[in-house]
Amino acid sequence: MIGAVILMRLVPAGQCQRTVQDGCEVLDPTTALYATCFEFGCPGDSLLAQIDSLCCVVASNRLRQQGAASEAIADKVQRLWRVAYCPSEPSWEEHAHEDALRAFAGILHDQGLIS
Image (cartoon, rainbow, N blue to C red):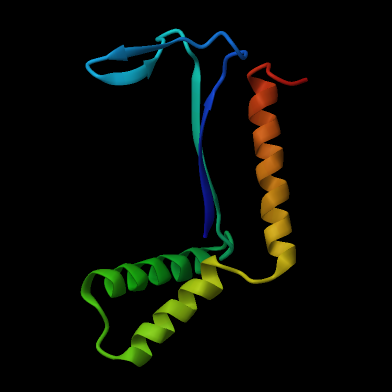
């Protein structure tokens, strides 16, 4: 799964004030923040794809937390994870990149920072 967590300060340059409170640097309370998270998984939206995705996540978490009974099982779980969430096709990565750029532009446009 390719993902990005975005935290943007939505103020024009030079208008953001920083202060120190209790030893921590903080933004002025009038600073607008926009936080979002994008995840680009590829299993699909069908019920079967969602079930497969859930099974893959559960198996991967179990492997990470409890280990596997054998190397063969560990290899199979890791292979399933790579196939489901780390595709190697360049077209998939290009599509995720285009989706991310479209999302960023939408956010910035919605906030009035670009037209």
